Amino acid sequence: MALLVLKFGGTSVGSLERIEAVARRVAALQQAGHRLVVVVSAMSGETNRLLGLARGLDLDAPAAETDVLLATGEQVTIGLLAIALAKQGCAARSFTGEQVCIHTDGHHGKARILSIDELPLQQCLAAGQVAVVAGFQGRGPDGRITTLGRGGSDTTAVALSAALKADECQIFTDVDGVYTTDPRIEPKARRLPRITFEEMLELASLGAKVLQIRSVEFAGKYRVPLRVLSSFDEGEGTLITYGEPSMESPLVSGIAFSRQEASLTILGVPDRPSVAAQILGPISDANIDVDMIVQNTLGDGTADFTFTVNREEFRRARALLEQVADELGADCVQCNDSMAKVSIVGLGMWNHPGVASTMFTCLGREGINMQLISTSEIKISVAIDEKYLELAVRALHDAFGLAQGGDVAGMNNN
Image 1 (cartoon, helix red, strand yellow):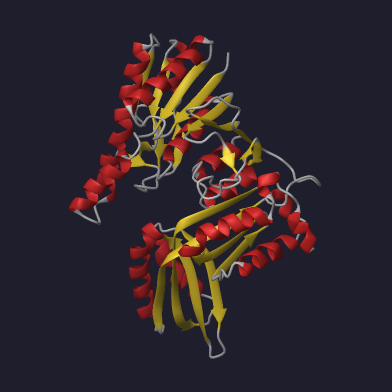
Image 2: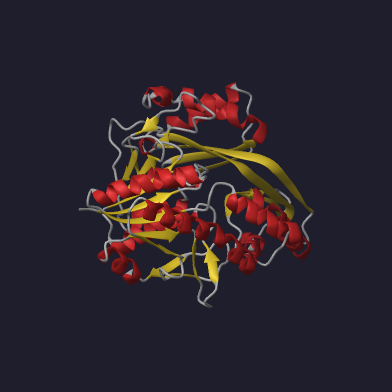
């Protein structure tokens, strides 16, 4: 008898029929003797609908009140799923994030989990019930509702798995695993039977939508066995685990991308050691995540400083940067909110410098200009014009032979 934490995303619970299908699957697992905690998202499209209502009143609606509004989406789903489970003769109880005692910091809209009191869930499981938990939400230090950001239900599921020492955390979604890239962009994309936490963490941080990045961080930190499965089809899915690169490791395991990129450049700032902190300090204080960073030193004692942010944060970041530009006496601020980021990821890249050459040659052959570049031991990211995104993904997928299982094409350029 295993203790399993199952998470079902918005598409999986997007209608009453799909909620009933989830209930049948959960009931079958309980009848097989498993102890179950089920974490659910809001029904597909509901979070966007609620956010639209808030923005219809005020584009800068208070974050704390927006969290109160958005948290209702998951509460609807837990109630409906508990009703559907009861219809299946399966004893269940629904829990909000507060009732599960998921304690978070006070950053509304992007809260981080600090601790979990697993006692309410343990008591539920001991009574032979299925615990149905609202994902995406918790309780801040002031007792107010907080939300964990987009995809936060994944983080809820993995955090609960860690707290309960679950045998496995299973993420059910509308795809049957992690693919070499998005099959909607590249039809030849291939499901990966296994991927490492390191690779999945990079893919999630770089735009892959299968899992939220913080859920992968949690799983890696607490050694939670994590599996991505389809809500609609049977299969083994993709197991996310620890691994070491080997001679047989593919150079590139997957390609991630993000359409929601914007760049901001402050021109003609004083070229001194503290200038980067002066520029990015206010951005960080506003809880805006900065991604790629480039500083170009000019010959006249000044420098140009460029960084990228998610497009949803673009308007706030631009306003802050314009204030900084005035304070520093910079020449001007230039912005581009129609960019995309494409990244290749793979443990096999560690010892093969030819991978970068293959990537850059491939993009150049397609006439795609790289505006920014960033690298780590297992990834290379480039910022490009959004209009070239799909072409870049397909070209890189072919260049690294990902449809054939990660052919070592890149080694030819060593």
